[in-house]
Each structure stands twice: as structure tokens, then as C-alpha cells.
Image (cartoon, rainbow, N blue to C red; front, side, top):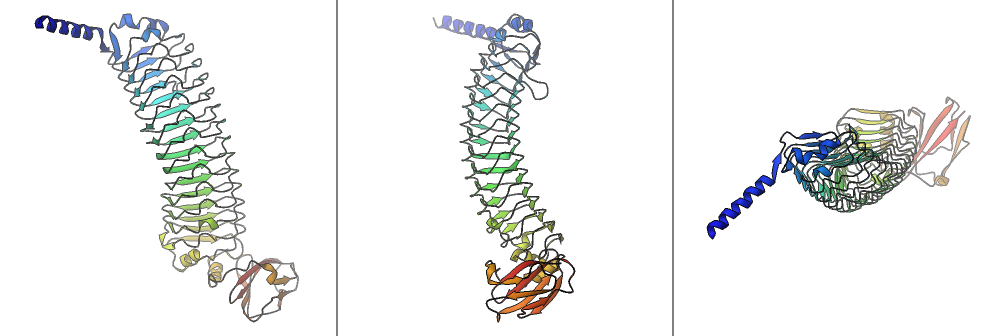
Length: 501
């Protein structure tokens, strides 16, 4: 009896081996419907293709001839099929050892494919999942049991796609998540369980994307977070649990008004916010403490102040604020103490003062120090700048700013009174007439504490200096133009522009 059992067992085993076997180590291209229909006849007992499978050809309208397959060792690429509407026929495939490409970035997609039905049993892709250029695909349903992607997830140029529903079992990606140029995608629901991205997160050129809801579980991005040209997105709500990212780049976002959604972000690498025409402040970044890389804020047409960056303490790379035409106030940066690269502030036409950068340690700087072409900038004599000019740690340029901050010597002169606060109640000192073509008259409530009266021309050159109080000052020898009069008391300093004509 025992002998019969052993013989029977081996008989079943041999039959199983004969019935189930791998094949096609070099892969195969199926380019017409006949190739699909005759697959089982041409490759009997083949349930696993060792190499890659490419399905691409005019007239292919179904994949039912591939029902014998349960796994692939290499890639599965499906593109250029002008009659294929779903993927029924791949129902028994549970794993793909390489990459699954439903359409490709360079070669195109499947113009009539409207469903991923047929992939319901797929649980693992050991390389990337790419879904590109499928013009009629509306959702990702069909991948609902997919739990593992070994590398990247890329979804792009699917103009009818309105939802990412079907990806709920994906908890992380080893590589990047890329969502680009999906014309009608409005949110990212379907990625709700994604908690980490080992590579980059790129969200670009999705014209209807109005919300990042769907990324609510995301906590960590090991690579870059780059988001640009999503014209319907006004904030970043949906990223509320994100606390760490290697680099962050936000640019050319036409409707972005604030950075709400980044409240838990405490540290980032390179920080680049540029070309966002409606961004008015940085509210949403209130917990950001450190930028471990370069810090760049440029070409934001509505940026008025730096509210939201109140807790930023350290920047290890370059610091750049440039070409923000209405930026007036950077006082929210008062907690910033260290910059590990260059310092550049240029072409901010409305910025009048560098107050807010007072506490930076100038010894942390290297490379270069630039303050140029800020048409309204007249107050540069903050402790940081004064200390830097006393002992420069790198080459520097200071020019083409407003009077008071137009060159090194003008700033150094003002630095002599850096610990004397400015007067903001202008009614306490009256200077008239303004404009003037002769004498200036000065009226002050207290006259015996005046230390000095100074007048600078537009180049920042001192053209008059008088110790003590003087009620009348002649400008008869002055050339026509704009000047700055500065009155220094024992406690306060007052500046006013005057016009001589």
C-alpha cells in the first residue's frame, strides 16, 4: 500500500511539472490578435514567462488568450493597441518580476483603454508601475489588490483620468511618485495609505488638480518634493502629516495663495519658492526650523511678507531673496541665526529695510555677500550687516539701493547708531518745507538731546553734517534731487526723504 502511495504521489508531481512550467526566457512580442489567441497552443503548459512580454499591435481587442499566465519574470509592456478597451485575460497574473507599463512615456499608450479590469489578482510588481498616454482611462480600478511596487509609480498624460482609486493598498514606494499632465484629475484620492516615498514626489502640469487630498498619510519624502504648473491648486492641504522632505520646490503655481498643508514640516533640504504670482506669505510653514541646503525666494509677484517662517533658525546653504516686487517686510526671520553659504538680496523694489535678519552670525557666511538693485532699501544698518562689514568673511557688493544703503561707507556710517532705535511717530519731528528750494526748518519737542543732523544724497554720500540742534539748514548749494535727512538724538534716530528743486 505504501508503495502504491509513493508511486501515486510522484505521478501527480510529474503531471504537475508537465502541466505547469516556465517558458520564453528571452521574452516575446505579441503584435496581433492571432498571436494572443494562439498563445496557449503555441506554448502549451506555459504559465510563467521568464523574460518580458510586450503586447503592441493594431487590431488587438482582447487578451483572453493569455489566461494561462500567472507570473512574469521580466517586464509587462502594453502600448500601441488601438482597439484594446480592458485587460481581461491577464486575470491570473499575481506577480511581475520587472516593470508594468500600461502605455509608455516615449512610445504612447492605448487610446481606447478605459479600464484596468483584468489585473485584479496582481499583488506585486518588483520594479516600476507606469501608466502613460491612455486617453480614455478614467480610473485605476483593477489594481485594487496591488500591495507592493519595488521602485517607482508614474501616472502621466491620461487626459480622462479623474481618480486614482484602485491604489489603496500601496503603503510606500522605494522610488518616486510622479503624477504629471493628467488633464482632468482633481485630487489624489486612492493614495490614502501611502505613508512614505523613498525617492521624489513630482506633481506637475495637472490642470484640474484642486486638492492634494489623498496624501493625508504621507509622512516622509526621501527625495525632492517638486510641485509646479498646477493652475487650480490654491493651497497644499492634504500634506498635513508630512514632517520631512529632502528638497522642496514650489514654482509657477498660478493660484497658490499660501502654504497651508505643510504645518508639520520641521525640516527640509533645498528650499525654492519662485514664480508663484498670488503667494502672499508663508503661512503653513510655521514649524519649519531648518533648511539643510539653499534657501531661495524669488519672482513671487504678490509676496508681501515672510509670515509663517517665524521659527526658521538655520540655513546650511545659500540665502537668496530676489525679484519679489511688493515684498516690504522680512521681520518674521528674526529667529534666523545661521547661513552656511552666500547671502544675496537683490531686485526687491519695495523692500525698505533688512530688519528681520538682525540675528544672523556673519561668521557663518562664505562665497559672496550681495545687496544690490533694491530701489527702496534704505535701512541696512542691522547688527548682522554691521558686524559683517567690520570683518568681511567673503567678497561683497553693495550698490544701487536707496539712500542709506547705497554703499559700504554709507552703511558703516549708519552702523555707528545701530543700537539707537528708529522713530516711528513722525509727528514728533517736523521738517518743512518739503520740497524746498532754500532753507529747511526743523521743529522738535525736545532740542537739548540732539546729537547730530546729517544729510545724504542719492548716492549715499554725506553732504552735510551738523552737531547739536539747528532750527534752520540751508540747501542753497545743493543740486536738485532727492536727499535723506537724518536726525540722531541720544535715544532715537529719525530719517525722512526731502526733495530739493
